[in-house]
Image (cartoon, rainbow, N blue to C red):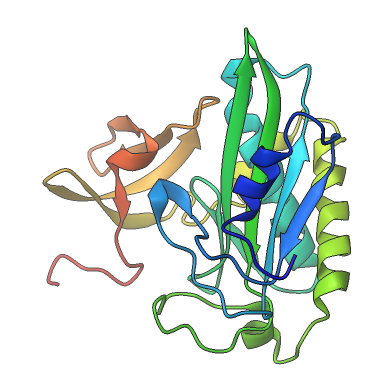
Length: 237
């Protein structure tokens, strides 16, 4: 598709008939969405914008975060195979060199106690060289100093995602923590009116971020309840 409102919307329009593993890809999204209804900036024809349909029949509704980990780790695995040191910024943005290179928007459809289907929308910055509205963004081309063929990147990336999806999940949580941006590093955060220094020590199976404060106490946060402050933020700013 040359242009569509969003690939997640397009996938949803075909949800009843499309099989597991179906993919919708476009050159440009008129209304690309990120987490928390943020807009996704992408230059026409430069990046990968696609959605993949998963039908995880055996996943219980409370396992929604498991799929988020699978998709994020699949993207990380692929970028690392290209010698791009990717990390996952909780919950599922992908960073390289403190800059965002990929975003994921996952939408689940629950039937009873189980996940009936999942649409995973992925935006991966591939060949874009300038970001006018997202100064903390980067791309594969910016990091590697070369351009990539989009169709090849898509095929290879899907292979890595489905390798995670079809694999064993015994080490998934540990792999996610080890790939987590700022894991076990002291950094600054903001929650409501509080600014504080803490380190990430865990992520709960339901997705809450667990931070340890400087006094040793721990606190769990939902996705929209905390803000990561810039990595070079100090109390003097």
